[in-house]
Amino acid sequence: MNSGRLGTGVAVGAGDEVGGGAARVSPLEPAALAAALAEVTGDAGLRASMTAAGLRRAADYSWDAAAAALWSALRRLPERPRA
Image (cartoon, rainbow, N blue to C red; front, side):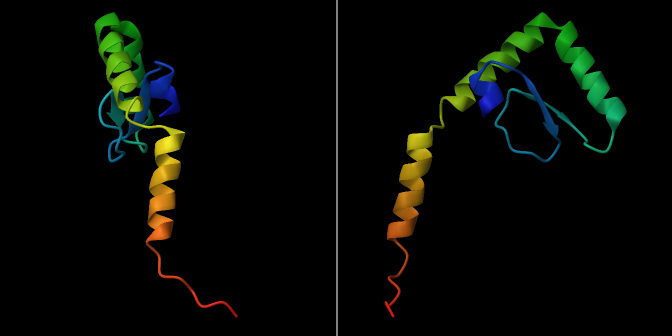
């Protein structure tokens, strides 16, 4: 999320969930990573679309929303008896 919020493209493992805006490569294939980086750095249109997708995705997340979701989950836990 930090990269997306900054408008920086990312390369992620093929199974990682990022919701768009990232080059997907196998972490076990350095040549595939090199090819993906070369493609992104050499294609301004691709870079622009990845930047826009990353910014849109990052806008869906905030620390306030994460804290609210955690607090909501904690409130649903059963209360433990005090010793």
